[in-house]
Amino acid sequence: MADKDGDGWTECMRGHRHWGLHGASGLLAVHHDDLGTPYVLMQKRSWWSHHGGTWGLPGGARDSHEDAVASALREAREEAALGDEGLRVQGVYRDDHGGWAFETVIAESAGLLAAVCANGESDELTWLPLPEIAAKELHPGFAATWDEVQRAINPETVVLDVANIIGARAEKGWWNDRLGAATRLLRSVAELRLTHPTLAQWYPRIVAVVEGAAKGAPDIPGIQVVAATGSGDDAIVGVVGKARAWERTLVVTADRGLKERVTELGAKTAGPKWLLSQLDG
Image 1 (cartoon, rainbow, N blue to C red):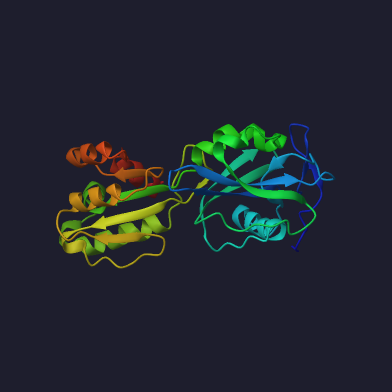
Image 2 (cartoon, rainbow, N blue to C red; image 1 turned 30 degrees about the vertical axis):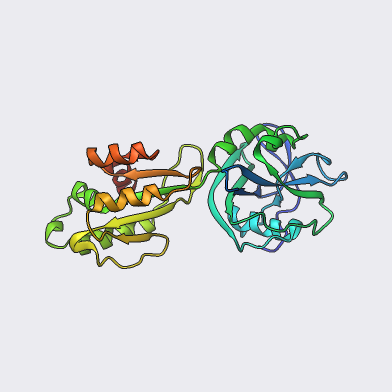
């Protein structure tokens, strides 16, 4: 286990030749401007590199001790002098070729962060608006997955109707200890890897709305806890209403009235079983 122990060529089960003995990863940094237009940090590969002159993402071989996120952030530092400040990882898209995979790490960027060609692997680094990307000569691997990957670049938030979910969970005696039940639920959610239809790993923002006796629920790493000052439903509607136009919001509740209210604001909904089945699984 050592730095750069992933460098080297390998062949996948499809008979393709790939760089990266342990697979490879790249960073897809995306920033939405005030009008909601996504900008993606794109790299034009040096002429001498594999598929030189094409456009793709800063990235490269993954070392044996790294996961996809660590590898992609390291490659972004090495190739684009891009630190992880101002970046929030949203998820990982996995393109599995059988025995070898490229993992695209999607990260929301707080702005059009400064990026420079920090080594000889790039001829150019620039933030391109989404509509202009398809017009470029794209790296074949990037082009093959771009249609699917771009559907997952919008920030996503999951809002939990904690009181409703606790009721559906029906722990023994939960009604006598709503604070304890809420705390246990949130701690379980914080440790859970939620499933996503496109991404192999998904890291949405999670907002948990608590009310009544559960308002004292403690802060949980990775979860924003919102204590309702009045109706829990009103607090959830308030959270959804603050979402930016390009953000996707999923509200987890079985309350029909609440579902109607948040749907009118553009949110999607899922019943508590969607979450509880993953916790139980």
